[in-house]
Length: 534
Ligand code: FAD
Ligand code: SIN
Image (tube, rainbow, N blue to C red):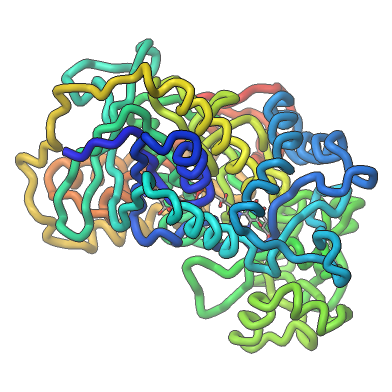
């Protein structure tokens, strides 16, 4: 039995910024961060474009950033949350700069070089070349290392959060007073399942892009936290709003994850074209290549289908080579590595699953309906993104809510005791898995189902078909889970099936098209509802 004042599951921007906030305020508290692979592997690490923040008041303003966020969110954002994130965001960005994060400056070195992305009416994206996430992750790890009350445990895979359910009580989603007492986690080095008892627990496990065949998300992004909280009867919301990034690099060799060609490239002047070099975005939106992501991804998907092509193209040949390679060195090198020279060839691009706008429902302090539990980052639904996230608002959201959740934990933890009587994990009656193919094949099937039936364009028939097939996968996987010893692969499959179910069910509940959810059987906007899965 491990005991820690605060248990944080995940070491991306959400997890580490929350840990640092608590550790700085309260050196007397112990903070344990679990991460399922290595400390620096996360969605955060791959963020390219940057962090959106109002930096240049006079030219930009909070009102403009709020307006852009609401516009992208297509009527479903929570205005209070948007205000909180936009107005507190610049202070949080200044804070990580103090902690050591570097952002590119203009030639004069006086000001930050502010980039532009789809849906933004002003240049407001702070970035570090096309490696912003890598730089933030580096700086947060370095800062956390200076705080002796933070312990990061690598290769610990959280399986379930602990609630009264583990003490034998029957809990439903409407049971009042559900409490979280920590989590069970598989130590991948010893294959033992350890109990982590905590006074407060924070879930910061990131997104779930791996539920689709093509995704920009690394393999860690299997929606574990959302699935764990849902299983524990926590509230989950807006899961139908899955963001497909319009421009992942099309590589016929196939890659997992697919490589992202940042939206900042379009902000820098890249133009979407067909194979013949014709522009097409004017047919879909007056903002053309810089329209919000849902519109651009649907347009590319439509052109691909109409023309029977594998991909569309991003034309950067007219851009200055020196400036392009200075801003986007990683993208330039990656393109060259597959035989595409962005200064001579158009870059082949396809949409790919990129971001979960829905997730664990949290309030303005990062709290869920489960007490003693917080959630921060991409695994949450705070109300900021509504039906479609505005580019580069995600890192900002994680910083703002990491700060808020951290301060709330600091203010309340003294009144919260450890829970006694928590049993060890019960692995009785299980045997080692005989055939890994049962897991790997089901994972492939799952991705195919979601990509074919619950992708960018949906229909009632496709959603029903997905649900029928998911049911079979669910039953088979639960049988496997109940009879074999636990492995990360099996847990991830189980979590991905839960995510797939939540996306498909929410999509079926939404009888309209809005933001990222587009159902040809309900092509118009209808009601303003949140699809809460209580
Ligand atoms: P993550 O950074 O994904 O961290 C999750 C952590 O949880 C990881 O450490 C993981 O190992 C751990 N974990 C997961 N499950 C378990 C488990 N069961 N047990 C233990 N540990 C677990 N957003 C922007 O704002 N700007 C951008 O420019 C931008 N670019 C992006 C580019 C790419 C290619 C991608 C994939 C995303 C991008 N995003 C961007 C989105 C943004 O990076 C993420 O939303 C954000 O980093 C999520 O941070 P997080 O802390 O919530 O999760
Ligand atoms: C990108 O660089 O295009 C990704 C930005 C984001 O996901 O916010």
